[in-house]
Image (cartoon, rainbow over all chains, first blue to last red; front, side):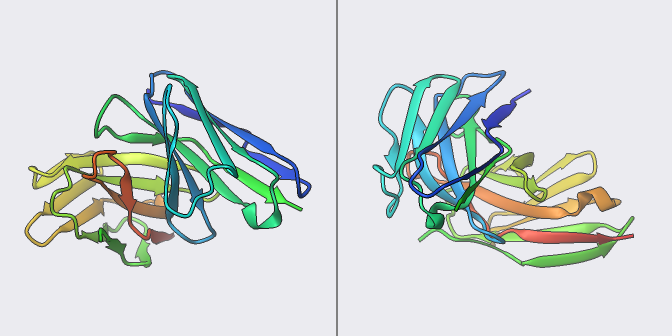
Length: 116
Length: 112
């Protein structure tokens, strides 16, 4: 149980393109999902907390107009990287909290984004 | 501020036990977690421990928590080559949003 699906697993696109990444909880409902960014050989950096039916909460230094988050249902959150540039190339990982309040997060398999 | 630290590397021989250590600073954390990350993949939840527990065992995994010293460890018995990965400890924030504070990650290499 507690499976999180992230799609696509890899994206290569030209500079200026907008890219949407989906995160789905397959067998549980997730009121809260999280989006992380991971640089090579580093830990995960939290970008934002996504709450179903409300606006996402962004961490300091993360541009909300650059990284659009939508959490329209209890099983789906999307991250759109708008007008992507090479510096946005990274590994993006989502997670979903099983239950409400201080429950384990279950992670997707990540999306490798490469902007040319 | 809150900080979680781990040693960067650990190398063990197949069949030996591995012990991965983690220190944290937030004494009010309620849960502490261990995750495994294989190359190019997301994080797999291995186990977690509530802060009022000292130990938790789950098959080959044993978690020890020393709350006084703010020290968490993960012991993997009979380590196999498939255990080679990066291991992250994480504490849940008490800021009200239940965000994780991740450790720096320990790269475990198992030698055949």
